[in-house]
Amino acid sequence: MNTRRSFVKKSLAGLVAGGVISLRKDAYAGSEAGKKEDTFKLGIAGYSFVHFKLDPSLEMMKKTDVHYLCIKDFHLPYASTAEEIAAFHAKLKESDVTGYAVGPIYTKTTQEIDNAFDYAKRVGVNLLVGIPNKEDLKYVEKKVIEYDIRYAIHNHGPEDKLYPSAESIYNLIKDLDSRVGICFDMGHNKRDNKDSVADLGKYAKRIFDIHLKNVTAATKEGKTCELGRGIIDIPAFVKMLRKVKYSGSCSLEYEKDMKEPLAGIAESVGYFRGVCAAT
Figure 1 (spheres, rainbow, N blue to C red):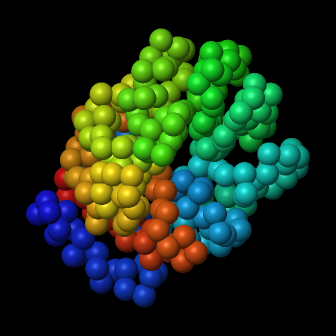
Figure 2: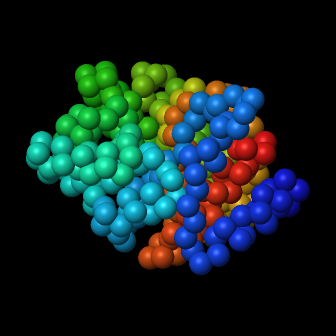
C-alpha cells in the first residue's frame, strides 16, 4: 500500500471511532497557509442516502462538513411544484448545502429526456447526470443546446451494457456538443479493469462530475469500500485532479453499509481531505 495513504488512514482511525466525526472547514484541501486552494469541490452523491429522508441526510452532511449535494429524486420528486422546489432549496440553505446537479436519471425515451431537462431547469441546476440509450445521444445533444444545461453520462462498470467505462462514453460523445460529457464513476471504471487515474487525465475535458469511491478489485466482483481501503491510488488521483485543473465536484458515492453509512462516509471524507492536505 502507498506509504502516504497508509499514514493518512492510520491517522483517521481514532477520528472515526464510534461512527461520528466533525471535520472543520479548515480541513479542506488547500486551506492551510501557503498552499494554493484546490479548484475541485468535495460533495456527496445523493444515492449515498437512498435509505434516508432529506433531514437525516443533511444531518450527516453537517456532521462531516460537506456542502455540495447531487440531488436525487427520492429527496426532490420529479413532479415537485415550484413551491416545493423553493422549500427544498431553503432547507438545503439552512444546512449550508448547495444542490449543484440532479441525477443520475435513467431515460428510455425522448419524452423521458424532455422530462429530465425540464426537471433540471425547474430545480435550477446547470448539470444533469443521466443514462440515456445510445440511439438517443443526438437527441440529448439537441436538448443540451436548447437548454444550455450540461449533460453528464454515468458509467456503471462491467455489468453495464451501455456505458461500462469513461472510455466507452467518450468514444460515443467526442464529436457531440462539448456540453455533453461524463459523470466519471471512478470505482465502476476500475471494476471494468480500467486505470481510473490515467482515464481522468485522458478524458478530463469532458468530465463534468466525479463519483468518488474506491473498490476492492478491478473485476465485476469488486465491491465499494471506504475510500482509503481500496485498490485505486487516491493520492495519485488527487495529483491528477490538480494536473488537469478539474473544477467540478468530487462527490462521494458511498455504497457500503448503506443503511448505516455515516461511519464510512466520515472515514472517506476525512481520508480524502487528509490526502489533499498531504499530497
